[in-house]
Image (cartoon, rainbow, N blue to C red; front, side, top):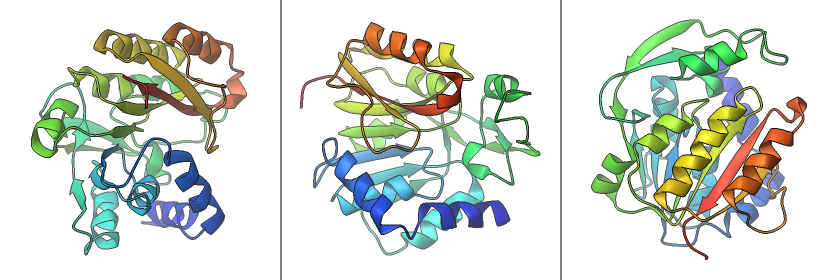
Length: 243
């Protein structure tokens, strides 16, 4: 509970951060849109999507986090919480839980190997494993409709999430880390194969694009390869059509 409390304190109660987030996502999310928040954690992005007038399906496998989401949005009929890990196929998923820092709990064994001994990650401990339900983006689309935007933040499991998608969507984002650059490259290849055509990047928690304009996938891949290790993480944004 202490780790979850820290997350809630870190992500809520900062009006300036919320305003910056809303201004950033306003170019991707419009009133009335459907948004999938995959890896919703305690819902700071979910809050922004709702403030922008979107209907949100929040997908989160950690029971403590989904309990918090349901409490926060208990009276909001435009929020649906799905307690599951999103991946390549439906079915049970083994989740590695970081109790002290639940935002980096992961279903990816590769992510654990990459973090082991890595600078800035050595103090992190995944101290528990639980089995959770699994779903896919295709399953979510069939159940809830086609989203205008999908946010994917699943700590090294992003390629599995995209493997469960068989069609292009208007726009999405996926997280990358500098300890697993090859994974970002695989995600970009998957997206271009699905029909996504333009890409850009935001670094860390910055609410701004790091590149001017939208680029080809190979340009973004080269940019990610050249980033200093200390950049740590960020998000790649992809569009299948021009807004």
